[in-house]
Image 1 (cartoon, rainbow, N blue to C red):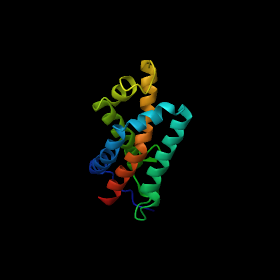
Image 2 (spheres, one colour):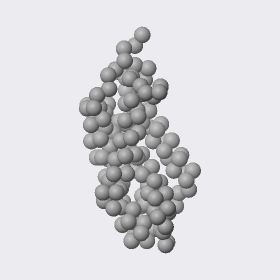
Image 3 (cartoon, rainbow, N blue to C red):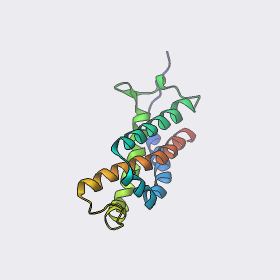
Image 4 (cartoon, one colour):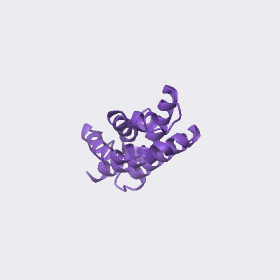
Length: 146
């Protein structure tokens, strides 16, 4: 029987560093917001699925020393993977709000025509999904390297 690996806060800290590092440039890029505005909601779900696949692959397929069965888990899901997803999407969302990107690009930047709060919120969620593709790479890499 495989020994359960203890999950430490330092694992999340490493993910946060990597996630924020690669998320930053995409949050403040107008093209990401234009792309998000033109996406349908099912596109955002597909992009989120890609983020999950990249994260899982980077943690458990690319790293031969790590086994998903040996990880500490909650409800059958490894805590490390849960943390990775929260960091990947969360870092992009935090940066978008800190930099006021939705207001800058969607409202004042004119990406959306006469946007409602719902339009801005939904487009922001889609932009977060796009940025998370890059954030998950940084977060998973930092977790695996350190």
